Length: 241
View 1 (cartoon, rainbow, N blue to C red):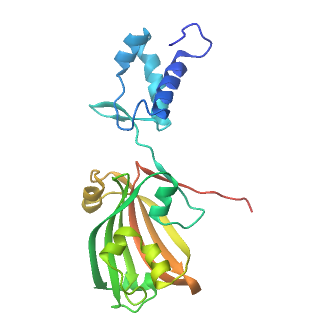
View 2 (view 1 turned 120 degrees about the vertical axis):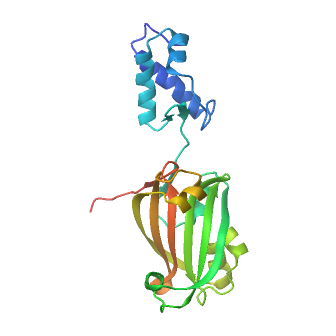
């Protein structure tokens, strides 16, 4: 119930009711909420009051507006803490989601100048090129392209890539993954990324380049990732020195 005589502003009461329904899953991600007019009629309040509540929830990331369609419960973003090095599958499982990998292409190519430099190989060396779609609860989150030396990781297969490359590298090959370096930037999706991620060309994506190292700072993999900006965010912990 909305208490009109309460010292708590009406817009804040509306805001709290919607927020509680989202947090208790009564309103689910992607579900459309009633219109401003419907809220105003239901509680006998002004549409401006309702609009203020909805604007606040949009700004907080609980709701999102779609022009010509309405206002919907926003899809929750996955938060990546960059404090440690984990695989995508490990990261998703730690958050209670079922990870998945769909291998779109698995080939062996000759390393060009860029790939050879990143992996510290001779140009023309044989490397795996693996295109993957990363999923969380069957929903596409990231489109990734991996490069890895065939000599360093013999026997890598499409089936292994669909499960866990890190598990294969550490458990079967016996290499010890030690560290990684990432470079992040905001960009927009081109046709290939948009098609695989289920978004529109020009939609924002988070582009990440990563080099993962084994012992003695030898590069294991060079990865180019395109994460949906509406589903993923990074959290960085900083200490003043």
